[in-house]
Figure (cartoon, rainbow, N blue to C red):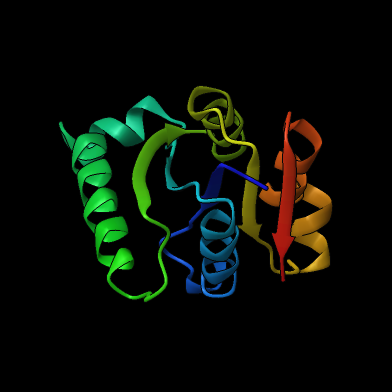
Amino acid sequence: MFTKVLLTVDLSHEASWKKALPVAADLATQGSGELHLLTIVPEIGSVLVVQDLGEGFVKKAMADALADLKALRKTAANWPPEVREHVRYGTVHSEIVAAIDELGADLVVMASHAPDRIREFLVGSQADRVVRRSPVSVLVVR
């Protein structure tokens, strides 16, 4: 069984957790383990854009994301005994892989939706990038 399950959550897309959350919670509960909820505040990319958004934008975005993760916990009934929330800032797939190592996760659960063909060709999906780079098993829920 899995003792540390990491669920990735895109707070701006309910589809990223609606189906995956119950699966991750159930797997963590079966293993008497921990469930770690992770969301990433994506890196803006340009220093000029960050400057235009104002000082403290990233810090506020991360605090808001943490509050949203805590609110998400109130939406589900069957949580494992130990649930922790994590917010990171940076490139989504890189931060997920880094979190796997730092948390000692032994399973990643993430949702994936089929992007349109042009977007898939140009940038690929975050789930695909994590699956290719993850040192542990990744369960992709559709």
